[in-house]
Image (cartoon, rainbow, N blue to C red; front, side, top):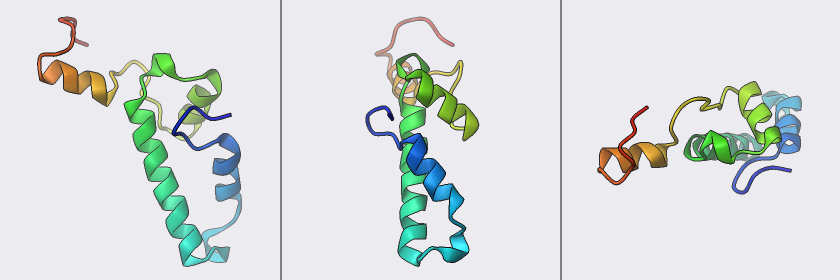
Length: 87
């Protein structure tokens, strides 16, 4: 099961199994949009809040933000709203 707002491992696998040459333009565009939104969601979600399955999926698809702040945390620090600790 995927974390909220994330693409499931099953959907990712199904999308990658079928070659683009056999997909309609609509399917290709949908896959691209899903992939981009999942990548953004991966970046926004702190590593500490990800399920074990989602961490594994992100690592395999190179969407991992291991040891990095989420974009939300970076924005808080940039605006002075975060804690004083910097990474």
